[in-house]
Structures are given as C-alpha cells and as structure tokens.
Length: 116
Image (cartoon, rainbow, N blue to C red; front, side, top):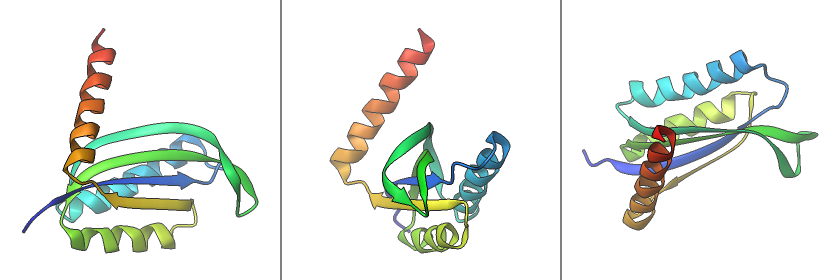
C-alpha cells in the first residue's frame, strides 16, 4: 500500500499539566504507530495565543507531528481528535513532494543546530 507524507498540527486545551499534555501527544502517536504509520518528526511549539477564542480559551498548546501513513489512517486519527475533549483544534494535510522536501530540509537544519 502506498504511504503519503502528512503533517498534522493540533492544539490542546491550556488547562493541561505538562504530564497530561505529554500523555495526550503520546496517545495520538500510539494511534499512528499502531496503524502502521512512521513518525518522522514531532515538535512541541508550546503555549501560544490563539487568533480568536476557541471554547472560551484564548491560548493553547500547539503540537506538530509529521508522519508517513496510508490514507485510511487519517480518518481514524481525526475521529480520535474529535472524541478527545483535550483537543480544541486540529488540521492534517497531505504534503506534496515540495512540502515534503522543505520539511526534510527544515528538520535537517534543526538537527544541525541542536548538535552545535
């Protein structure tokens, strides 16, 4: 089966503790891995101000996951996002080859900065 490259950003409610936040992220990573996805990158962007209030919240924890998966995995992932009250917004999109190349370049730049 053909695997596409995807990027998903989800926003978690700001009332979570660090432990709860990590558990939530791990839950979604586990769903992906159990469905045969390969996680390429994970970034925690931290607490950021939202452009407009969502569920009466003005901030949220932003999280990015980049992964390769079969198209059927996305529906399962998004159902779980919708069912989880800790997730206030999510967006998943398929990367075309240019976006995938850019993401790979960005990851390698980030990795080289960490090593310095």
